[in-house]
Every structure is written in structure tokens, then in C-alpha cells.
Amino acid sequence: MDIQVRHATDRDGAAIKTYLTDLRAEAPDTLRQRPPPGPGEIESWLASKLALDRSFILAAFDSGAVVGLLDLQAGQRSDNRHVARFGVSVGRASRARGIGRKLIECALVEAKAWPELCRVELECVSWNTSGLALYQSLGFEIEGIKRKGVNFRGQPEDDVFMAMVW
Ligand SMILES: CC(C)(COP(=O)(O)OP(=O)(O)OC[C@H]1O[C@@H](n2cnc3c(N)ncnc32)[C@H](O)[C@@H]1OP(=O)(O)O)[C@@H](O)C(=O)NCCC(=O)NCCS
Picture (cartoon, helix red, strand yellow):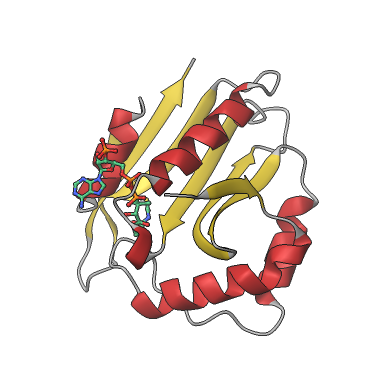
């Protein structure tokens, strides 16, 4: 496997748009359903993330194509600056090859170097067994279950809150 993980920049808009178009068309039941990216949507999203302090998007590339994305952002106020939150996805054809793990490990190395940061958190639907196994194996712990907190599959189901603190 020759996967490169690096920060996404404003020059990656087209590759990210292709990736997200495919992911949204797949519509995995572990993610909120979203329409295909509209004109300018990805460019504005990238620009808004890149403009923030303590925020980054990591992209995994395979032969120039984006095959995974991780979006991490720390709180922007003095009362939540010590907390970061992320979301991650890997394209269907590239799953179970260690890319999700690699993205999260890279993100943790970078975020753990930020002054004051001492918590990284995430949210994951309760039926996402591969995601839950991955997060737990990296040291995230379940803090709580928001019972019937999401409706991704036609009925209210549980949402899981996980975090790592140090
Ligand atoms: C969840 C997701 C990001 C994991 O990424 P991935 O690249 O497939 O995961 P990895 O290959 O790095 O797997 C790491 C671990 O996940 C677990 N895992 C992965 N695939 C699994 C599967 N099919 N069944 C059970 N566990 C699995 C294992 O614990 C694995 O550990 P290992 O490295 O010791 O084998 C990916 O499946 C995905 O994008 N799913 C759809 C979108 C989504 O659900 N995003 C997360 C929302 S919270």
C-alpha cells in the first residue's frame, strides 16, 4: 500500500469534490445523507476550515486520488479551546486497509502538540461496528450514548459519544 497522508490545501478542491461526490452517492448508513456537492461548496468548505486556528483537513491519497478524509477542529473560544472534534471517512474501495487508522494517528500526533489541548472527541452511530472498533483500538473511550439520538435508517437509533483525554 502506498498511501500518502497530508494536509489538504485549496489546490485539492477538485480531488476532494470527486471523493465526496462518490461518498455521498454511496450514502453509507453510518453518515448523514447529503446531496452531491454543489458548485463552490467544497471550495468554500476548504477555505473556511483553512482560515481557522487549530483546524485542519487531512487527506489520504492513492496515486493522486483522494481515498480518505479527516476533518479536525479545536474549539475557537477560551472555554473550549482545549477540545478538538473530528470526523473521518474512507472511500468504499479503500476500506479495511488501514487508511482510517493512519489518518487518525496522524491527526492525533499533530493535535497533541497544540498547547492546552487535552481532549479529542467524536460521535459515531451505534451500528458502526468497524468505526467503534477502530476508535476503541486507538484509545478512545465511550462516554455516553445519546439514546434514539439519530435517525439515519428510517427510525430513531442510538448515537455514541467517544473521547480521548490526556
Ligand atoms: C469507519 C472507517 C473510517 C474506518 O476506516 P478504514 O480505513 O476502513 O479502517 P482501517 O482499515 O484503518 O481499520 C482499522 C480498524 O477498524 C476495524 N475494522 C475495519 N474494518 C472492519 C470491519 N469490516 N469489521 C470490523 N472491524 C473493522 C478494525 O478494528 C481495524 O483494526 P485493525 O487495523 O487491527 O485491522 C471507514 O469504514 C468508513 O469510512 N466508513 C464509512 C463512513 C463512516 O462510517 N465514517 C465514520 C463515521 S463516525
